[in-house]
Length: 295
Image (cartoon, rainbow, N blue to C red):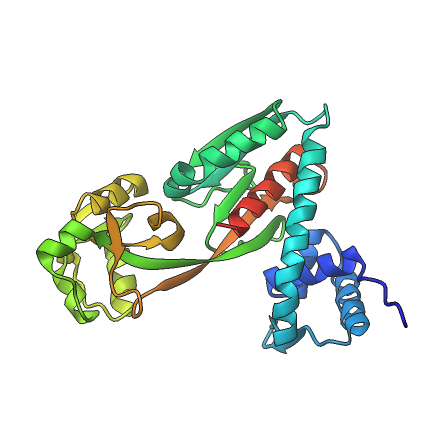
């Protein structure tokens, strides 16, 4: 019987980073490698496994069926490796100082308290600041050390990891829909009251592009603060889109036309290149990546 050694972790890590970034250049930035080095590692893994893992589409890469099947297993290995790294780093006596995390007010309210509590248990000398903002923090000017975003950064001095694909639906309180009626079509949703996060005109344009003929007058409630706006929805004041993982925690709401209307969006974890020489930022970044990947 011929024994085949398991794939080297560096090759698997190169595959995982490429799959999450969607390109060799993006993965190289995440891992701090040159693009040719990363490409050789991915090619070596494909040769070892006798599988084609990626297909080139335009300027990016897409996983093959074999690549998608392997990705699920490698993600589990990556999460285990991250947990080991975070635990080991967190117990080092030199891990101290302040790390700031920028996220939307909704994520800061629903997700980050648990994340910060776990980080403080693992590395009690760390001081964590949560910057709850719906604006993009300027990491190069150190408005934050790490940011959770839905858009990929363009600046070359930033490191970004695509940690998951978010899924959003439209929600309203069940008692509100019982009073107003549950719409059967996207067109009928225009008759509902709408709650706006941020700029109502911008939100109106996005929703109209999805085939729901709302008008600026449809947005009867508006708040720049996402927590306030979401509570208004839960209290029965209208309908709005929301990340399904967040809405699942709220028993007062239900999705509206979930089979017809949905929004998929990427979740990126972004930091500056100091991650490569700052143990405290690495610790927080890896822990956030692990938590966000399983949300």
